[in-house]
Image (cartoon, rainbow over all chains, first blue to last red; front, side, top):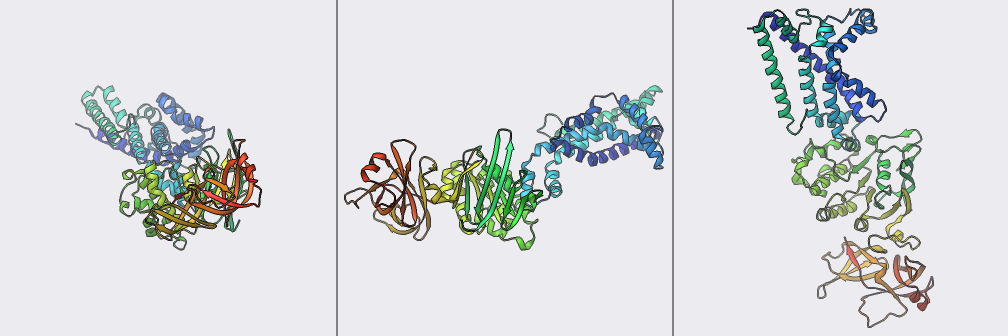
Amino acid sequence: MLTPGDLSAIRLTLELATLTTALLLLIGTPIAWWLARTRSWLKAPVGAVVALPLVLPPTVIGFYLLVVLGPNGPIGQLTQALGLGLLPFTFWGLVAASVLYSMPFVVQPLQNAFEAIGDRPLEAAATLRASPLDCFFTVVLPLARPGYLTAAILGFAHTVGEFGVVLMIGGNIPEETRVVSVQIYDHVEALEYTQAHWLSAGMLVFSFVVLLALYAFNPDRRRP
Amino acid sequence: MTDPRIHARFHLDWPGFALDVDLDLPGRGVTALFGPSGSGKTTLLRCIAGLERAPGAYLGFDGEVWQDGDRFVPTHRRPLGYVFQEASLFPHLTVRRNLEYGLKRVPARERRVPLDHAIDLLGIGHLLERRPERLSGGERQRVGIARALALGPRILLMDEPLAALDLKRKQEILPYLERLHEALEIPILYVTHAPDEVAHLADHLVVMEEGRVLASGPLTETLARIDLPIRLGEDAGVVLDAVVAERDAEWKLACVEFAGGRFWTRDSGAELGRHVRVRVLARDVSLSLEPHGGTSIQNILPGTVAEIGDDSHPALALVRLQIGASPMLARLTKRSAAALGLHPGMNLWVQVKAVALIG
């Protein structure tokens, strides 16, 4: 069955995905709100940057993250100056990479949800004495709830499923950066097919259940 | 104008549309912003609400400045109520929570209209626990109006509140609006392109066209202008305030009294003493030098010629008459006008063939 290493990888994966999803919902909300509401010419470039992880090979993202977060990179020097050390090959480095990598899977559903609300409920709230912030929490958030559900599920699932970026930025350190996808890779390399099966089948079931939940919660949407 | 409490000056230059308005509006009663679609009346209303930001504009309300230069009071700090064309209720809240949404954000001392009163006035007491999607269009709009009223606003802005409704729903809501008109002390700005709503509700009329104001003044006087005959629907004519003074059960007629005389008209069931409005079209008014007997026309009143002007066809003249304190319009051919020797100041008899009782 599952070895202690497998269990540790599963725990790490769930921690990583939970943390990443929580951070992404926090960071993604203002970005998605801005993208949904702005008339600035910056909308297209910012939208494109957010969507980049959809098309780039994970190795490209991982490579540049290594460069930027590394000892000679700008952020690496900043984290060192702050006494945080270096992020690559640590759990927090993985979190940072996952946030970037899963960004479009959270921002885009939120943006769609905000756009679908339109101007009118915001105007109605303003005529009912609600300040913009008040309106966001009492009108926008409740109306965008299906969008948040979709965003959370997709962000979580996509983080669980990542591999290339993890390998580039996290390496393969037990208890620190060895998540399930990497663990499966190791099993296969070591020809431990039974172990690989257990974990892979688990991932398969997990992914199916997640997508099933997604489609069940959003019955009228063709795509999430 | 008595009590000019709203001063609005807006200039907007959008691609394909310009708004250029400088208006004084009364601080009481219903002011109708009337004009075809695209005339800028909704944009003007949105500017007044602060939903649209027109640079360089001025907006004063009741001694306060809402917009002037860099000063711009955001919508949520303006003491107004706004009714949208579609009710725009919050779909995630019940009717009750929709009504309470604005109420909770208004300090208790500013709540001029108790919630129960707003609910009664609009007749929505039985709908409170429902979700907006379970309401009919007319019910939704009544909730939208009650929601705006419950704020205790100092001015109510209504953007074609009946336009999205079919005739039946419209007739269901109109009586509520008339009650509102009688019950409220606050000014109402009412955007519409429907002549019957103007005739029913307006006290003051602003006529708009292509982003500009063609005319602005008290309803009856504005409708009686012959330099700018304003057609409410099919024809020029005036709307007069009146009271039901007498009812004749035998002939099913009612007598209404207005400032200048009385009319007999078909009895539509309005009880004695009730305030009504009557509409008199220019084409139904003819003039005579003698108080004829032997005519089928029942309503013959003494009047004075105030002004004679051209009508749309070169053969026709439009005559503004004064009957007591009320103006009236008559249309006749220029040949008749010449034969009668009409001139301003002349006294004659005004025969009114048909009077429509409204509201």
